[in-house]
Length: 144
Image 1 (cartoon, rainbow, N blue to C red):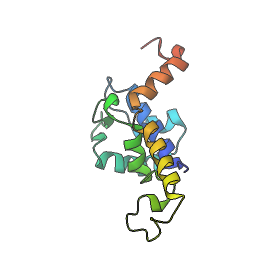
Image 2: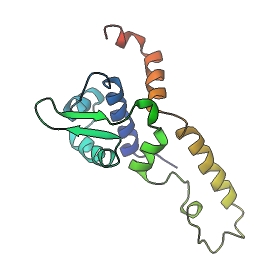
Image 3: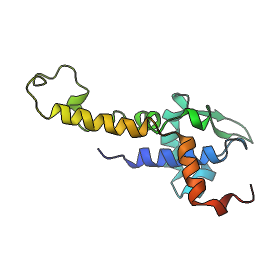
Image 4: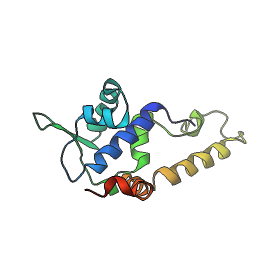
């Protein structure tokens, strides 16, 4: 299982919105500059996050994006499933009509790997990640 740049950049983009959660909206241009990610690529990522209700879009001179829910209510697993699709290591784990399921000795292994991945990502929120960032970079937030 490998998380693509879409998933990784999506998490980075959302962390920017976490850091500005109390301040208002943030433009994609600002996020692109701060994260050194192409604004065009961020435009592709923001769509599914807005459609899913994780992010709200605001138009106008003070427009931009803002988290639609508290960072403590958004899990990494939720975000990755929106951007990446299933987090299963192999397709057959999610297929209930596999003709070999009764005989396959590796199916339970793949299922345990999927469960382990979900144990981590479904129990890690954007707030958890922001807290870890603050702990590793305390000097960046002294003036706030």
